[in-house]
Length: 434
Image 1 (cartoon, helix red, strand yellow):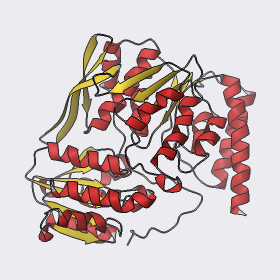
Image 2 (cartoon, helix red, strand yellow; image 1 turned 90 degrees about the vertical axis):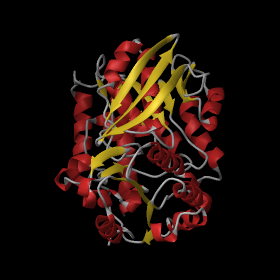
Image 3 (cartoon, one colour; image 1 turned 30 degrees about the horizontal axis):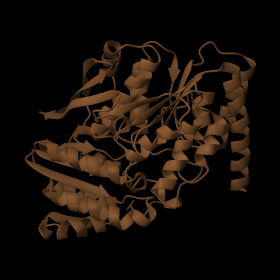
Image 4 (spheres, rainbow, N blue to C red; image 1 turned 135 degrees about the horizontal axis):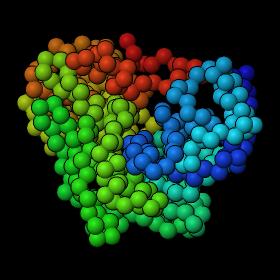
């Protein structure tokens, strides 16, 4: 019965979404990739809001139910039957009474979990500007595909469908993304650290002083360069997001100086390499939104570049990577062994990280494995010392933001600062909860 109701809901949302797009004719910017979609969405929104009436999803609304939510209204949460009934009524109202406040530009995320997902989403809304962030050697959600290349092909459909008058923005540093240029009828604009990039990132630095984090770098395009300073965040992924956003701004007629001013106001989303004050004078790098292998390795490299009295990593299972599970977790473990002084892992798959770190030379007395979040949090609270820098990262289902809440200095701010779990039709009790 639930499946029947879900299919009915999807059908109604699909028809209503198409009609609303026909009624208002907004420009659509579509973002896909295995990592960095939400940060890129926020960066694009920061740049364009200066000159355009825009809307982007406030949550991770990037699937067959989430995409219509952003198109039909500025919804902050999803919910049960009565919520969707309200969404449908508001959508019908948008059709009957044309709203002057409807956005001129929609910035949408296109998520892919399994074959056919991108085709379904493109049947809902076809972008004129397409951005592909990064895929990596072992991307998240690859478990339902034959291999990484087949996942990349699914994502490349967004680029293939772009009109000749559109634009494709591609990460030149990611080989699987850059290959997508062959699929595009639209002009291609590249971004990245490569010397060949149209929008080039250079002079990148992570900064962390007295609990304050920021990144600095230069963006260059067409012979001009501007300095970029992003507050309250860390990691090269933020530079990629800013470069993609700059590309969109340039395509829509903005200049680099104005773009750099807009990016100064950019705030990275919760759970993406955000630094928070912790207990006993420690600091937390909260990267708990998700954990693709590429993102986890990037987070560890970021930790490596920072100075601290002691470096601790709390790493959870990396899920939805299928046959690559063993390889990915062992690679993370070997890298962690070179960087951290103390390693905590949470989950059955994460034990592979611990084993690989031990084999790579991290002393056994520095490695601790847990199957429950509460156990890891209790142990960590006891071990924290002043000056510790603690990276916390795991897949969404592991819910490691609960560990962050237990060790952050101001847990009363958790609702505003940490990742929040999206409501679903039903919840499956987590194996990591107790």
